[in-house]
Image (cartoon, rainbow, N blue to C red; front, side, top):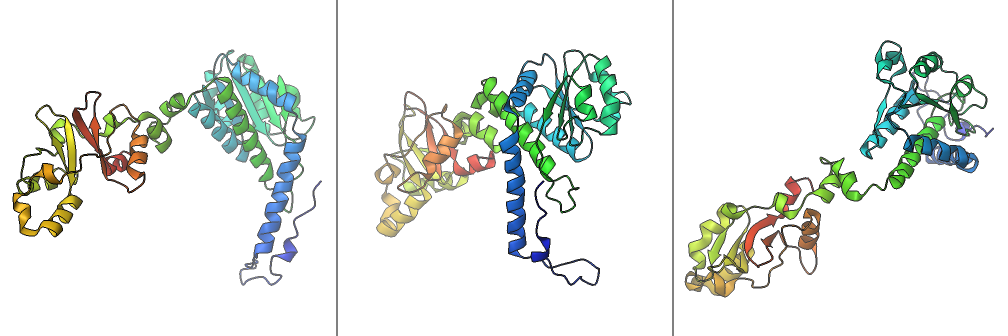
Length: 345
């Protein structure tokens, strides 16, 4: 067993008016982190990889749903591991042991696996659940930290999670044991991810509302402004005649095209300021084509939206938009930095 953290070195011996020590220093926190690291290393050094492999294969081979259950803090961990598996495309769910004993066990079938998390392996609610789950034909797997526990003996398989001690000075509060359970469950989840050959695209499909999913799913054509929203003009148009078009479409630019809708260049509000400063009153006679940028950065509609953002931010200087061009160099849209940020990228 590991030694108790040296709390007396970091906490004041003088209680506050409420009878609680209110002083804590950096050394105390450092000692606690070192102690927790030591306890976690004990787990890593002693975990039985053959048991872990058998457990992983049991989940991989499950014909039905992989259910997780637990009580208290172990229940929270069981729920979280189940959610991780779901996000990776594994059929999984959390089954409350109390609710299961009051009807929810009806969801179990002989195609399912039920994983029971318990540090002690003596949790009463789980011990009561086992014979009921066995009657449904589910495969039962205990995940415990006490050798020879009652729960381990009642299940088809047991995985022992080696626990040196809790970080709690009384060795009671479940902080190290739950950290071990979480590390174990999530590591197995990633092993399943690899075994199932889950691709980034498949993972993204399970996270469509998150930034990860959007970066792997959204293409330029999904977020770009299209024909009727484009601030277009011809190169022969006078700059001063296009001020409304320049400012009204919310793009901060003009897209200069020819009669066949091929992109010639771009003219931005920054170009307008520079032209006005350099030309003065002569700006009234200048055409857009004479002052436009004829080599703007462009992008195709099937490019990933996240790549459009990277292209905007690339050296030598960032830009706020990219004209979208098809294979025939025809302008079909524009994607702006605002569009990408609004899409959650």
